[in-house]
Amino acid sequence: MKKLSMIIVIALLGFCLFGCQGGNDPEVVEIYVPDGAPALALVSVFDKTEIGGKQVKFTVVPTDTIGPALLSEMPDLAIAPTNAIANVFNKGKDYRYVSSHTHGNLFIVGKEKLSDLSELKGNTLGVIQQGNVPDLIIQTLLTDSGIKFGTDSSDDMVTLRYFQDGANVIAGLKSGALSFGLLGEPAVTNALAIEGMTEVFDLQKLWGGDGYPQAGLAAKSSVSDEFIKALFDAVTEAGDFASAHPDEAVSRIAAHMREGSESTVKKLTADTVKRCNIKLIKAEDCKEDVLKMLQAFFDINPSSLGGAMPSDDFFRIVK
Image (tube, rainbow, N blue to C red; front, top):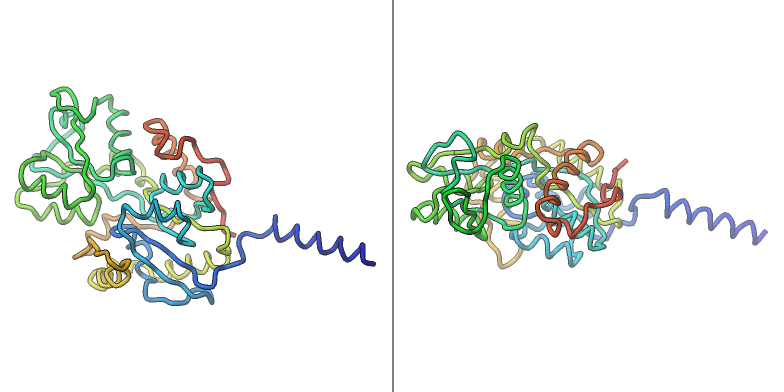
């Protein structure tokens, strides 16, 4: 009888280990989102303290701190650049990719209209987030077009000059130190408010299709499928909250900023939110697009993914 009981216990343990996804939610589910467009992906539920019967805490962090936060395994869930999630996964951190949320909000702005990327040659392009999605997207597009680029100045190439954030690129455009700037929304809207400034290229259109999975949701294994499904439902039910309530969205982001930091999102319009290209797509439906983008990034710079393409268990299918 004891032997039979032991067999049953082992069988149940095996079921839980191999048949369950998560299911051991933390007491308070900590959810981090970067400032800017990624925050808009979840801003509709920032007012909630409970989702799916679990306590939740949303924290908006400066863009450049989301990678280190994942490496330290601080949040239970986090919106982050897709390549950053691949990077920490490849470094053995307990995160899997469960959904994509922003699908490209990058634009090149300047005071001169151009018809082709090759016309950027001989000019300096200010670029945000060196080694991350904006930089990797423009490098991929230039490479695919056979256009030389680098950090040196030359008439036969595009000179890339890197900046920590959009505010510094905008300052360079204002002063005339930069001919063109690569920015993400909502910074693009701020740049276009400068007299004479215009949209030069929509990088989503240049990429093709419906854009690319710029940022997604990473989840620890300790977070259950049930909770993630409840979060998905809450976000879906909120619909286009930021478009309908742009001022409230700004207020919510400011209210949830990590202590000691300040949001760069000062003003939003419905048009700005639309250009942020926000849409929840589950892992099983965006896997192909994610792998296509990550392969392009790997070809440009393998270290941007932690030195390897992620294995198939990078994706977590929430059922």
